Image (cartoon, rainbow, N blue to C red):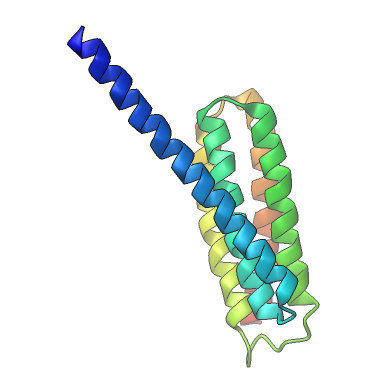
Amino acid sequence: MLVAASFIVAGTVMTGTVLATQDKRAAQMENERRKLDRTKDPEDRTESLMKIADIQLTYVTDAVGASDLSKMQTSLQEYRQTVSDARNTMMNSGLNPYKKSGGYRNVELGLRKHVRVLEETAKRLTLAQRPPVEETIRIISAIHDEFLQVLFK
């Protein structure tokens, strides 16, 4: 009887920790969205967009871990849109990537990390479940390559 009670208490603590993490992510994402509404500077906007993309990527990995494929696909779509917004913000900013490279580097470094996370995430899926993640990897890799060309041409 004591063992069962300990397990329930431990399970409650674990659930509380998971909920606290989810609440923290949601609050962080909301904070970054508010920053986007307030700022017009392309580098600042890109920084917030990449932080949002980081959070959205954690939702993707959580969905894969929970075998929730519909949530994974929804999170992947949101993630791709956020990365596209970050790309468009910098590419349409008119900033010289040699003189003001901060935003460009922020996106390039973030996407490099994201590709590794997505590749590891894809390995946790069956072959039949991988296409949405593989398509996202292809898109993100293309955007990453575009930033490398701009930074190092």
